[in-house]
Image (cartoon, rainbow, N blue to C red; front, side, top):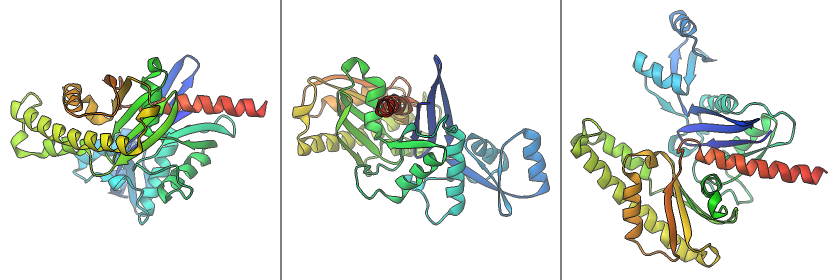
Length: 321
């Protein structure tokens, strides 16, 4: 079985093929804690909500946690603050393991490949991988898979740029970092990420800005959101251009170079127009072709992981033969 796994800062997603269909699973990376009382247990059991027991507490995670937090007026806790696994919080690590189990079915046979991305923008080419990366690798391996790491930039190019021979620049605007991959014919030439340029956070600031309260159609709110997005996009894309020039990878890129973006901000109304506006205002070290956003911002990276997983499984089968 081939499967792709996208572990994001705010959402875990997987996608696998079953015959002629693709099956996706997702789970929000948040949880709430309730006191383990008879009334709480009865309330949850009557509602059919799955929960876990941890000491003297009951734990809900994913979408049920968000829904019940509103009902019970409880704080929603992020499992990956700043995109990092909390090493001093054993409860959070246990819930992360449950979440991976929820979106990742057991392997059909030992050695099935699972290609995955991890949150936080880690350098996965390092010999000594960070604790977070090794933690998620172990969780995937415990499900019976051979974990294969890949970047979000490569994944979105594989998912969206098949017509361009899987060549171009993939940009993922995540909640923990902005990740960029430069890909030629399915092979990643370079990748880098920026912690300080978070387009996703600009949306959060616009949502909490008192001057932008009201409906989505409120002109003040729309103008405030667009202003923050343009500023964040300018910083991010300027840093991307500078990094491309520093690494001098443009000579190896297909010309013209196609660009594809994914992430929660890309689903915002008018995002593509703002992206084109900022992109064309900058000078780039290559000729730019199409500039597009992923058709499915939720599953685009997971689909790219699935494509790579199928290629990896095929290679493994050839080696076995």
